[in-house]
Length: 87
Length: 405
Image: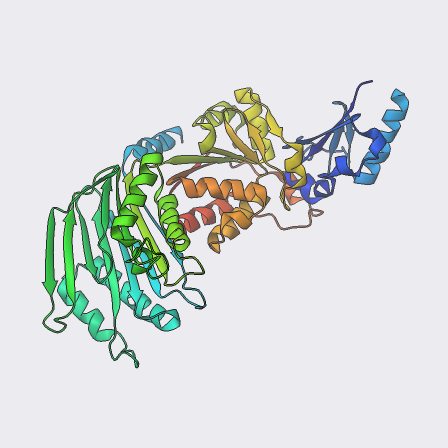
């Protein structure tokens, strides 16, 4: 089964608006998800300057899906859904 | 723009003098009884150092030493004859109630780039001049005595100070370290011990910086006297060499068509380049074809700033304005790099290792930083870099250039 890839934007705006709380996301995930989620930091996804995307902090999931105003809770829930779908 | 940078870089072939000091305060004292002062007289391309050891220790010694270095460096700058300067200093120092004398030793170093070095000493251990590991004798060496103070001899030397040479000045806390404590050092470490240690360090690392060598000598002096620092320890190293150039690129260029030209400025070698800013890093990725990699462990321990990334063969990549803001406050307050969050620390440590720091600033404003929801005032990159440049020049004697894209 493919891993869920999570890219957290660490640009200034995203970091200040909440990405800082997601730096240890991997440690917060349930133990049974270990090895199935790949968390990466990105210098800047350059989404904050685009209009109508919903606002920072941004997270990109599996290269295509953009989560705006991401929080550890929202992100964990979405990862859970994707893992369930993949099963 | 590019021309300006080119000029800045070609000027890197000029010589640079790195002057650094390391000190330890005598155990139990609130103030160091030695004082070190540096001065650069830009218009004369002249570099001055004054090191003084005040009589006794603690605050009283600190006052004597600070008065001595303040006066001495001002006299040096104004080219006051040495004898006259010494007499004024001696006449001015407050007299110690216990010892009934007012006294502070000094070592003065005066060097004009392209000329000879002049060293004057009174009461301090003799200076050490090294070319590689060879000790170099002065071209001229004379003693002068004041009629006011016949017991105070001043040694005046002139030295042929060339590229690659180092001059070491110490207080007696260095040369007398170990005295009375170690059986193998009846008279302490002595000047000969400092010389041998410096030669060994240079043999092991021929390019060792003045900062690292002065720190190593001071630390060794401390180590040789177990059970605490018995006397104030001060070591100054002046190292003449070609400048070590570092480049900080921050911010996207105002015109996108300048991106490629801008990215080429990042090809100076991994240890010498810092990319500050997410968009800037993305430009580098695109133009240079190198990905930024962030280690997961660095994400967890980034200490309040976004984590550091590395671009293989290019340099390190950090977030922009928050990280630069932290670098600025550390430089302005002269906080040691090791206490800073990882990204700021990495930049500060690189800055300390280099002599000439070239900023290349992309001037495009990041609109997302103006979002009223952002919980912190974000200053403009340009003004933060200007203040960083000022702090590097004033507090750390670095040469700084700033170019805009």
